[in-house]
Image (cartoon, rainbow, N blue to C red; front, side):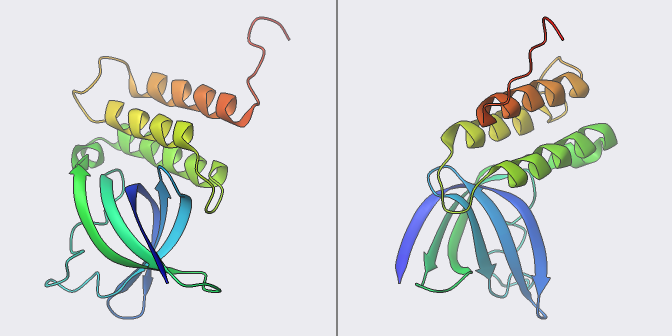
Length: 158
């Protein structure tokens, strides 16, 4: 078994069994990872109210050779962005950012520019954090996302 510690953003999460979660996370130095958070729904769990979308976390997990899911060992909140959920437009744009990040991130392949781009877009979508309209933040993210993939559009001519 090997263990790792990294900054992470939760891309998706699925209920697993009665009290556990399967989490797809984008990490800064390890790319996209899939983790099992045992007992995450128990009120006494160390992950209770920690594995929310839009928040930046510091997580520790272990992986075993030949297994698809790593095991989440510990987590700490680095930056909370719960206010995104108070505005429907910002919430839908933030979900779009996470969906695109999941499509663009490769499993176990680091992509720091993508991680930084997603984190910056989510921080700007927090109500009151930026003067730009939420749609402008989403468009800026999408253009940066395409550039990161090497698919920058030619905007000056068709």
